Image (spheres, one colour):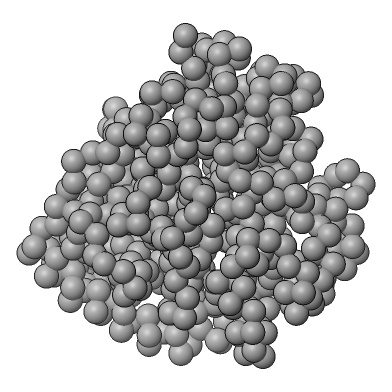
Length: 503
């Protein structure tokens, strides 16, 4: 009898539910946009009740679309964007809206903690730089600006932990997400009230639910959730994981010599290590889904989400030839401009930047000669240049890999994959036969929790199929080295003016 696992990926803008066989075959996929609310500049939020209902709709539809009986589904797990903040109240309801990881309202808190020495004092425990979109910064902002809501918090969640809580009625904070929140003593893998007190958030220790691991059994589908989703009541639910772990697991990143980059709203660039990498420019060490490993990460909200914005705002009503999809048209436009035929540059900072907390997206070098094709190529290149900056930092502390594995929006474009190879100077590998890697990683967690596989290494051997590598073009690589140097110069020059955008 075949066995099936359900994975649900809650990204920054889209929910994706996918059902997989235990051999890794993607049986059915359903996606649903989730409205992002912008009540003030720098604020990005979602209605938590609507988010839960949208997850239920996706799950019900994917089960129906698959034709698989709910009795054949051995488990379900969730992954989702890291950071952000989803709070559950003492009254048994959400405390306001959920906050998405592109939110920048709390940017002053990390800046203050860096300046006054608080971060430096706690860095040996945190093992990471602090960011405006982490739970620690957002909770500090809530405490200062909406104290009444802060005082109502019963549980602090990441997005996927919140959805799992609604599915099972049991509260947990899963370790891959918790270790990227700024709330965890990552060195000792525990809640640390003394550390939280140093940030003025001692009471938050009581708001953190019990900590679980990604492959742990964390409750079962309740009767109420069963009625909403179509899943069998009692179906096991696993801990799940941060989406960057889920994508890495789904790319079979199980050894330290491997490296991967994920192109979603965020540019996530990472490898795994038996020890954290401290005392360097590396921004993030967190706990990996495979016990005993740390995830070494360089990231910023500078990736394929920028192209989504361009599509929504510049191509929304674009007439297309029969059978052509919008991204095919975009690839054709980009390919019409060779890399050495345009000096238009795009800074992919629509949702934030690691360059400066107030950096803004920009096109530079435009003249009346340039067209949409030049702008689109600049977007492809700017997103890739941002990834290269992160990857270069990672390479400063480790050996060069034989190839880099790519996932996310850019991996769906053969042209963009080639640009990544040409800019980075490495062969690029992708995963065959799967459109939703985050959901696959979550389904692998459900399979491990259900004992279908003994561990993630076994699950990857069976469920993940890696494509042949795409090598870099040496001529294009030489061109991009020069263009990347100009991109770097532009970023450094503009860092001097972003402060004028402070409100």
